[in-house]
Image 1: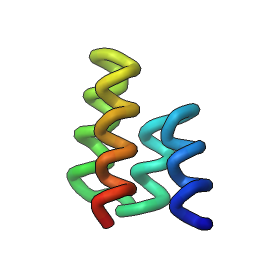
Image 2 (image 1 turned 120 degrees about the vertical axis):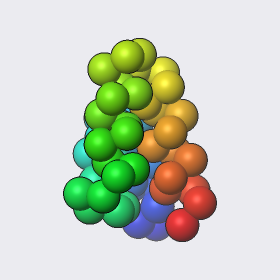
Image 3 (image 1 turned 45 degrees about the horizontal axis):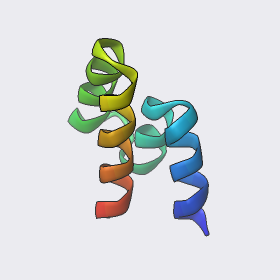
Image 4 (image 1 turned 90 degrees about the horizontal axis):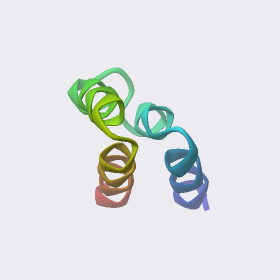
Length: 53
């Protein structure tokens, strides 16, 4: 149930979803960069990070 909540947050705010999953690690900073470059790549990366763990 927690993963579904994180995925919903990742769709709305991708960096927040990644932060809830991994904290302030490299994946978080990469997701901020991807979100700034394009919202869709940020969402894809966030969902992938959440689904992988």
